[in-house]
Amino acid sequence: MLLFKNKIMENTKVIKNIKLTNTQIFSGFFWRLAERCGSQGISFIVMLILARMLGPEEYGTVALVTVVINILQVFVDSGLGNALIQKKNADDIDFSTVFYFNCSVCLLIYVLLFFLAPFIAVFYHNDSLTNLIRVLSISVIISGVRNVQQAIIARGLLYQKFFLSTAWGTIISAIIGITMAYCDAGIWALVMQQLSNICVGTIVLWHIVPWRPHWVFSINRLRLLYTYAWKLLVSALLDTCCNNLQQLIVGKFYSPMDLAFFNQGKKFPEILVANIDTSINGVLLPVMSQEQDNKTRIKSMARRAIKVSSFLIWPLMVGTILVAEPLIRVLLTDKWVPMVPFLKIFCLYFALWPIHTVNLSSINAIGRSDIFLKLELVKKCVEFLILATTMYFEPLVIAYGILLAGVIGTFINAYPNKDFLAYSYNDQFRDIYPYVLVSISMGCCLYPVRWLGLGDVITITVDVLGGCIIYLALSKLFNLESYLYMEEIFLTRVKRHRF
Image 1 (tube, rainbow, N blue to C red):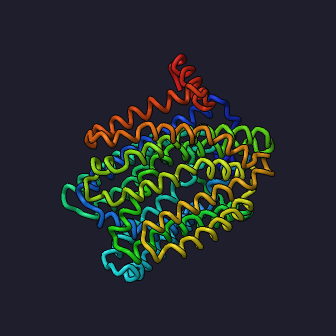
Image 2 (image 1 turned 90 degrees about the horizontal axis):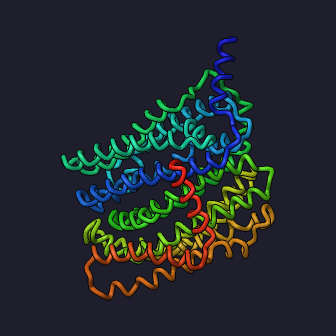
Image 3 (image 1 turned 60 degrees about the horizontal axis):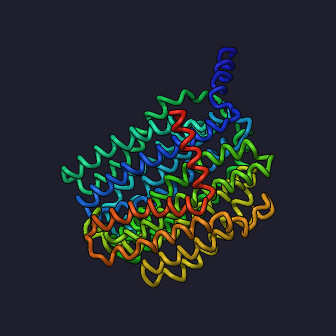
């Protein structure tokens, strides 16, 4: 018994919350960004290759399967991952309890999906979905096994470890997916590429993160964590259901090809924004949680995060809108051109993400998951109302409805911080608008390029290089705060030759 207690104490040192330094914060952001960019970059290349070899219909079919799995996947975390990050004194009993609870929930979810698979196939009038669901839903079980390790990494900003696991998973799954597609495996190439990614990543993560669960389980600890987590669970469930309901409706009332154009048009900008947004949020929540009693400090971090993410995301989205059509023709061929209107709409939608993410992270960090849930309830009522109004027209109208809901949602998410952090609408607008104006100015300068008839590849090259030069020049000219901040960090790191 004494040996067991000593082992728990030793294990707790691995997960103990430590005071994070500025160097650790920047290093965490750097490795998180590297992990996201590396993973999404390779996945993006694989998607391009598979999209050329397969086509919209196969992608649309897989999207139908993932709709159901994504909804049930919410229960894998159950909000407990964020609860472990937010709790200051979380120990090995907390982590082991969450591990066993998550694994049990995941097994139940898989059994449920296994038996529901034929009924889902009947709903979509596609018998081939049964086996696809039963195989792809194995990812739910694997997600439960890795959830606690991810929370440990986030608490200590140890994203270099996550970078390694993601890199191995992405590379090996890319090889498997492309090889199977080359061997005419069809839709199973997409399924096995996704499944092998999470399998390999989990194996590597367990190898490099030293924490291991012990035979301890505390109902009281679970109940305490759930006082914070259940609100996040309901919020995540509402968000996931609403997002996937959009795809479900497109897949049900329209064709798999329509769903493919809708889904891929959303995925392109989401990949670009998620790399930056997830990296910032992955650092923001644990750092803010340490300062949860210092509202002034949290407000300062929130303002910095909104400015930096806007500085990076807005030019990306404006630039993507600018090169959308020639880019799709070059990367995916003419058969994917119908996704261009969706791509442009969702670029505007995801440009608003910095406001959503930073405001919600601030609310979570101070422990107000109850407010987080109330915000989600209000937003989902708005989204469901807009979706119910647009669903009977066409997929493009549904996309415009999602954009409208996103705009309304920014005001809803920002509202509580008027009181919590004294961070008003006007303050947030002043922090964001310089980057929006400079990004739009960049787009206006480059728009006439498509009148020159230079060809797709040259047009893309001119837009990308010209956009970078113009945006950085305007940022320097107007002394944009985030530009000067990132320039200072970059020069400092170059002088030190380390991150």
